[in-house]
Image (cartoon, rainbow, N blue to C red; front, top):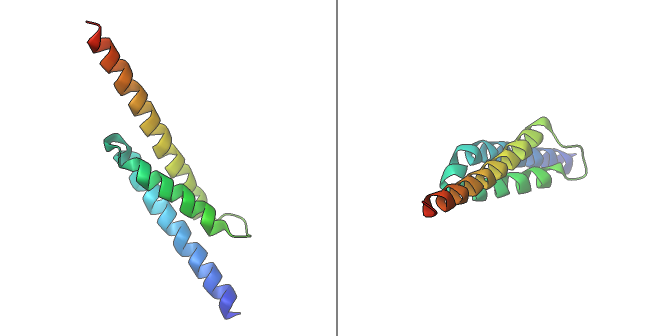
Amino acid sequence: MAEEKNAVSRANALSVASLILGILSIPLSLIFIGIVFAGLAVTLALLSRGDQRMSGTAIGGLVCGLVGIFLLAVFIILMFSFAGAVGTM
């Protein structure tokens, strides 16, 4: 019984950490450090699952982490496209 409670407590801690890191990854993706936070958010969300269904907090962390990765990719693409446009003038 105590081991089960510890496993649930650990999963909750991982899912909350995932959500916090995922939320931080969105604005920080504009200064490139967001990729670290987003990667950790996705990893922690997947680790919190264990052999159960993913909790809502873990899903939120996973989604926020993936949004952070997507925003960083869009920002890098836009940065290189504008740099190429300026370089041809």
